[in-house]
Amino acid sequence: MTTTHEADEDVRNRDIKIYVNGEIVHRDAAKVSVYDAGFMLGDGIWEGMRLYDGVWAFFDEHMDRFFNSCKAISLDVGMDVEGIRAAMRATQEANDMHADVHCRLMLTRGIKDKPFQHPKLSTTGPTLVIIMEHSKPVDRLQTRGIRLASVPQVRGLPHSQDPKLNSHSKLNCIIACLQAEQAGADEALMLDPHGFVNTTNACNFFIVRRGEVWTSTGDYCMNGVTRQKVIDLCRANGIPVFEKNFSLYETYGADEAFLTGTFGAQTPVAEIDGKVIGSGERPITRRIQALYKEAIRAHVAALKG
Image (cartoon, rainbow, N blue to C red; front, side, top):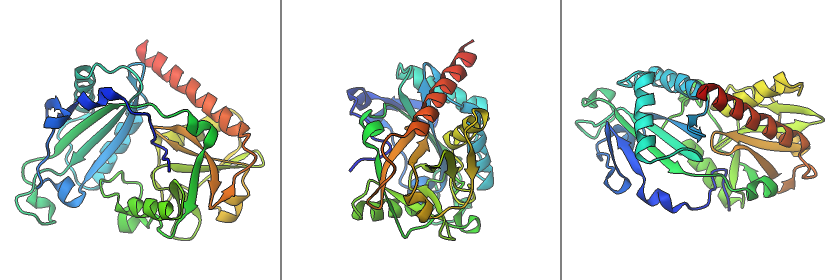
C-alpha cells in the first residue's frame, strides 16, 4: 500500500522543534492537554503548506481559507495573519529549514473545563500548534501512480458538516480510507450525496477525457488551493477544463486521472476499482505538472524579489 503523502524517511525529523502556543520545543517535549478540544472532540481547523526555496507557497490563499474556516465555526484565532506568519517563521528558523518542508498548522478551541461538548467550556483560549517536517514526495509515485477504490462512504451535505471546512474531525475520510484499504487500494475515491464522483479521502480528483480536464463541481469537497491553481493554469494555457458532475462511467473510461494536494502537487492515478486508467502515457498530466512547477518558480521569485 502507498499514499499520496508517501515520503522517504528523513532522520532530521527525529529532532524537529514544534511550536505550541508561543513556545518552540523538541518534538518529544511538545504536549497538548487531554482536555484540549481538538483531542477530545476534533474541534479545530488546520492547514497544510509547503516550503519552496524559503517561501511558503501560496501563503495568502491558505490563510484566506484558514481564517474563513475559523470564522465559520466561531473559533477565535487569537492573532492576525501576520501573527501566524511570524510564528511560522520562528518555527522554520528554529529548525533551520529552507526547502522540501511540509507544515501542519493546527488550531483548536483550547483546553476545556470539563470533558463535554459545549464550546463555552473552552475557557483558556485557543491552542496553536505548528509542525514542520523535512518531507519530499517519492519519485516512484510519478511512474507507478496511485490505486483508488470507490467506496460507500460519501462526502456529505454542507448543512451536515461542510466538506469545505479543513476540520480536525476527519473521521468521515478515515472511514473511507479504511474501506479503500480493505478493497485492496491505496486511497478512497469518494462520491457526493447524489452519486457523482467527488474527491478522494485526502486529495482533490481530476480526470482527462478526450483532451478535456474534468473535476467535480466543488460543492462537496475541500476547495483545495492546488486544485484551484490547476484550474487556473488550464484556463490560462488553453487546456479545456470543466467543474461538473460526472459518474464512475466517465471516470473508468478516462484517458488520464490525477490527484492534487499541497504535498504531492499532482499525483497520477494508475487504476480505479481494478480498472487501468488510460495507456500510462499521461501527456496532459505531465503538461500540467510542468506548468505548476513553473508557477511555483515564478511565485517564489516574485516574493524573494
